[in-house]
Image (tube, rainbow, N blue to C red; front, side, top):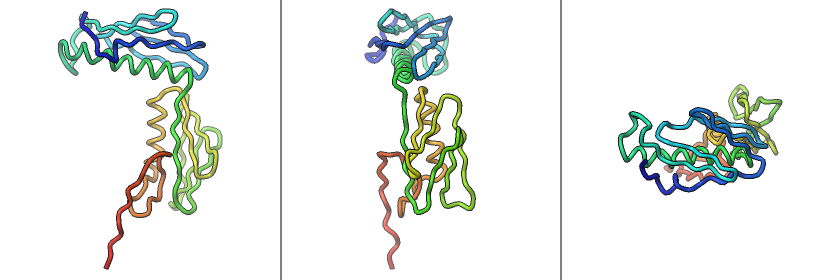
Amino acid sequence: MASASRVGRKPIKIPAGVDVKIQDQEIAIKGPKGHLKLAIHPHVQVAVDKTDIKITANSEGGYCRSGTGKKLSNAIPGTMRSEINNAVQGVSTGFECKLVLFGVGYRAAVKGKILTLTLGFSHTIEVIAPEGITIETPSVTEITVKGADRHLVGHIGALIRSKRSPEPYKGKGIRYLDEKIILKETKKK
């Protein structure tokens, strides 16, 4: 066995109400906010106690194209630990991405699983929320994306933002809540 990275060596605490099971090369995590399944990398061994999850490097993981030898077996446990920790946090507390619309007449509305955006085009834009994601609009210029899968929440937030990303002169468009836009000066005569 090789030594893992500092991140990979830290055990993951299992919060109350979260159930973790390992079958073959897959870990299933179930909690109040949903359930997620992750494939376990062949260079990693995962052990589950009653209170925490421990990740160790497995030197007999087989060949992997992304790297070789000691470097790979040191790097992969840290990555797997982060992915498993994100899944545990997602099913227990969940993740959210907040977006804000800047511009005259820009509006957002949700009906069921469909987000309808009015962004100054001649038509409205619809974004359908995938399974496990909920989209809310606290006001007509605010959008909140919630879910258990951190990657999927970020992906849907980026997809919504890409429908009208902020332009550099007036800052009109869809921004993340804490995003700062550096405005350019307009051309002067």
